[in-house]
Structure formats: C-alpha cells, structure tokens
Amino acid sequence: MTNYVFITGGVTSSLGKGLATAALGSLLQARGFKVRLRKLDPYLNVDPGTMSPYQHGEVYVTDDGTEADLDLGHYERFTNVSERSSDYTTSGKIYSSVIAKERRGDYLGGTVQVIPHITDEIKRFITNDIGDADFILCEIGGTVGDIEGLPLLEAIRQLRNDLGRENTLFVHLSLIPYVAAAGELKTKPTQHSVKTLLSFGIQPDILLCRSDRPISDEEKRKLSLFCNVKNECVISALDVDTIYQVPISYHEQGFDQQVCLHFGKTEGKFDQLLKTLHLKPGTTKPDLSQWKDIVTAIRNPKDSVKIAIVGKYVQLLDAYKSLTQALVHGGIENRIQPDFIWIDAETPADDLLAALSNADAILVPGGFGERGVSGKLLAIQYAREHKVPYLGICFGMQLAVIESCRNVLGIKEASSTEFGPTEEPVVSLLTEWVDGEIYQQRSEESDLGGTMRLGTYPCLLQPHSLVQQIYNGADLINERHRHRYEVNPAYKERLEATGLQFSGFSPDGKLPEIVERSDHPWFVGVQFHPELKSKPFAPHPLFASFVNAALNHQKAQND
Image (tube, rainbow, N blue to C red; front, side):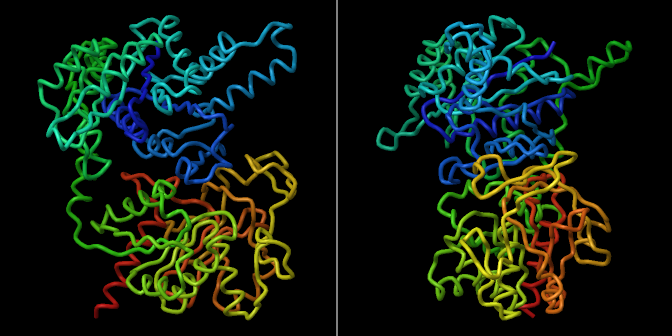
C-alpha cells in the first residue's frame, strides 16, 4: 500500500518545507522507492499564474502546462520526477471545484459545507493519480494557524483515520530561533506551534528543527518532552552553504531512517527484492555519491564568472529561483562558479551601463509588462555591440528582436502590442494555436489566468546553427513555455539580412522559438523557459554553454 507523508510548517514561513520535501524524496529514491511529491497551497487564488512574483516568487510550469508554486521546481530538481496537474492545487481551486459541483446539482440539494465537502475534495486530490508510487510526499503550504489553511489540516487529520497510522506520517518543520541577548536557542516557539497543531487533532511524528546553529542534546530532549515526539525523531535542520547538501545533512541526522522505521521499511526496496529471491540483502544505506559529487563541484570551483541578470523583480530573488539554479547547474560540470550581478531594469542608464561593464555575460529573463523595458533593451544593445555573451529568455528573446529592429534595421517604432497599439508590431498577441490536437483561441478580452501558451511544445532546430550544436546535433527539442505574445515572423527576412538568425521554429513553421546572432560569439534568445528543465545531475545544455561562453569571454578580455 502507498504510504503518505505530510509536511507542515510552523512559527514562520520560508523555512524550507519545499526543500525538506524534495530532499526526503531524493533520499527515499536512493533507497529504491518510487515517490510522488505534491503541494497544497492555502491561498484562494486558483493558481499563482496571475500573482506578482513579489508575492510567492517565480511561477513554475510543468510539462502539462500547470502553473504552480516554485517548490515544484525543487521537487523536480531533486528527484527528476515530472510533476503534473494532479500534484498541485490551491484552496481556490478546491473551492472552485466544489462550487461547480453545487451549481450542477451534484449534492442533490444538500447544504454545502467545509466538512465534508471541501475536506473530501482535498482528500480526493491527495489520494488521486498515485500510480505505483511507494510514497506520496504532500507539503501543506503556509504556516500552521493560517485561517485559510484549516481545511487542509482537517483533511490530512481525517486521512490518518481513513488510512491508518501505519500508512501516514506527520512531519512538522519549525523554527528554533537564536536570541543573541540571551545567548541561547529558544524552543518555546516550536512548542507553541506544535500545540496549535495538536488543537487541530494532529500529533507530529517527526520534528524538523530549522536553526542557524547546532541544537544541543538538552534542547532536543526538551522538544521531545514538550512536543510528545520521540527523541530520535527530533531532527536538526541546520543552514547549509548549498541546497544540494540538504539530502546529505538530513540523512546524517537520520531523517530518512526514521521515516522508514515508522512505516516498517527497515530495508531498502532493493534489499526487500533480494530477500524474496532468497538472496543476501545488500545495504540499507542510500547511495548519496551523486549528491556528494555535486556538492564537491560547487564548493571547489576552478573558475568563476560574473553574470549580469537584468530584471524587474531583483528585490526578491525567489522570482528567479529556477534561473539561478540552472546557472549553477551550468557551472557544475566544468567547475565554474557563476557570481550574479543583479541589476534592476529601472536603474538609470549610466549606472546600468557601469554595472554591465563588469559582467562576463548578460541575461535578460522572462517577465510581463512595459516597466523596465528601456533598461533591458539597453542591456541587450550593450551585449550585442560589445560582443558580450547574451541569453534572452522568453521576454528577453522578444526584446532582443525589438532591439535589432530599432537599432540595426532603424525601425524606431518597433514594439510589442503588449505595450499598446503600434504600427510596427514586432511582437504581438498570440490569438490561436494548436495544443496537441486541441485548437486554442484567445483575444485581448480573455482572462489572464491560464490563457497563455503553457507547458511543453516542440521546436525544430535549423541545421548547422549554434543552438543545434548546443543541443548536441538534435533536430527536434521539447521545451516548456509560459507566454502570451509571440515574435512576428514578418520581420524575419530583414532581420536575418543583418545577422539575427531565426534558428528555431514550431514544427508548422509559424512561431519563432529561437534567435541567434551569426556576427556574435554567443548571442541566443529563446521563447521558452529552459531553466525549468535543468537538474544538478543533468544541467540544461543552454546554460552549460552560456556559462562556458562567459568564461571564454573573460579569458579573452584578460589576454
């Protein structure tokens, strides 16, 4: 039977529930078990697609086009399990589903209530589409005590009764703050957090104690006593220098061992298989050599490069979580450490150019809206004219085309219809396309939420192009998209005459996917989001090539 692990958080947000869930998933995989990872967010938005990145960081997009919380990015990066729509929901989506059923008359005239209708819908989500997974790891977003999260807690409380204690486990991640004036760690906030959880009928089985310094045995004993958790199930979650150390640290603290003991899985799945064949079991310890190699590569770089990221959400770096991790991945193989120069796209021109002069490469990420466009265009122009490696992602690709139209072709009115009416619509609203076998149609009056080109789409690469070399000679690639506007191919011939080549198109030849400059050592713009598919153990080729190009540029400048 499938086992369920529920991860909750207390005292404060942003403690790392997503990383804890992802790390546990990777540890269970290393023991031979199959896992699926899910998240339930308590907010009433249907999804984060229309939310500002300042609210919850980046919007992560899955292969099937689900707009989700950034924690799903951690899940995929740590486990390589492809997330899908059945792995993410919000209170808003749950309530919408229940209300839609009520409107159809599914409840036969009954009064619709939080219990049982909302909680039943939550339980259906958690237990649906599990396949052959040995473990379902389910992260409950928010902080214990948040009013909108109460139905989520009630649903998992009910699931323990439905499935039995032997098939469910509650993990509570909480903060152990250090009070400098007293010179000691304080356990009281966690005690109160657990009491709040107990008031909802949930007794945690394992405590993950987040702290910036070691937790003493005496403090662990106190937490064990007052929180009614076994001493060995009080697990330290200390700060680490790289997130890829987290699985190693949790294993050293015995986290995965205690999870397996709770479910009676004292041996790895491979050991169990050997026993059924009457062969001698191997080791119950997971093989973490992959993670150790990654950490070693990150901690011991041979070179470093400075990459300028010009965006409008740089005050909250979680808005670019997958992007920065993909750049780190790009440097792992060749032991190159990317150091980031964060530049607000609204920075005055002289200051922006001064910051760019220190960069070995320039990246303009995705985004929406006209704010900061002039700064991004200036950065693209600088990269083009000074032969600095450039990577434009989504909006960064569209602006690269607009910049060439304005400053190379001399079309000063070149713009995007996203910014308003224009006589030179170099970038315009995507109104219709085919998604698999489904015809999609949009207009300016369409809802903003969920109406973009979302998820994985194919792209044909032009023979002998730079990107085809980067993708190891592939003719067809599949990448994830999240955008509403497209580059207008009507400008293709004029742009290609000036050196901006259209090196990737949709299979029907209608939608430009990639541009590159033939008169530049490394200048690439892509309509999709390659950062969403990068893994520490499988860096995305675009980022690996980009980081290497930055190093080559640095060496050329120093010669």
